[in-house]
Amino acid sequence: MNTQDKNIIIRPFKAQDREAVATILVEGFGKKFCKLANLPLDKITSMFLDMGLVGEQQLQGQFVATSNGQILGIMQLKWHNQSRPKHKTEASLWTLCRRYGFWNIFKMTAGLTLLEESVDPGDCYIEHITVSPNARGLGIGTKLITHAEDFAAQLGSNRLTLHVVGSNEAAQKLYKRLGFTVLQTRNSRLLHWVFKESIVHFMTVNLAKKQS
Image 1: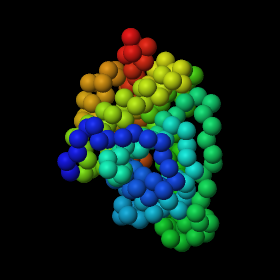
Image 2: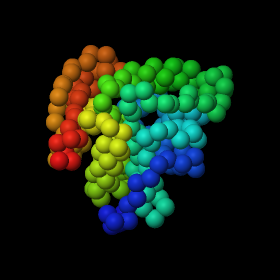
Image 3: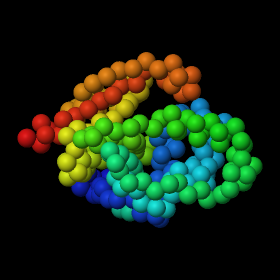
Image 4: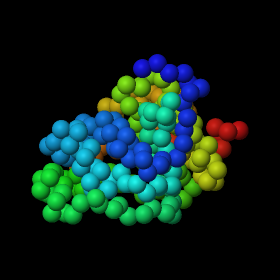
């Protein structure tokens, strides 16, 4: 796919984006989600929509990157005392279990809960960021992070932070190029047991220094 950087627009999430956002989210983290649900990616995408994990309601700090109206990248930011509505499921628990299997629903819920992070005051945390496989290498990730820095600065945040697994060397290279440094590295047996990923880096960039 060919596109020009100037054609990429970062904007807030809209209700009509939910199916495209769910698709890109599952494509981007498919290996991780397949550890939680023994289902093909299209089924996991449907499960996310039915569970309300990608709902119609707009969350603060939820952005999409578009080109010519097509969504190519997504990002969710999180900060201290952020207001977030509860997930509204599109189906009952009984229906979800019948469609996708009780064990898949249980593992997905537990696994996503395990990935949740609290955010310190003064920090803005990139909860997830990913780009469509067909649009990688076009600078979309860089534009999303730059937008996150500007948004976080407007919030009054001092740092932009994120987690990245040790095996994702391409993402680490991008983050370091954009000024992020590794503040902490942890080796988690629990994460290895659930996701087969034990090394996780906590990376930060100082917004005041970046903008000075």
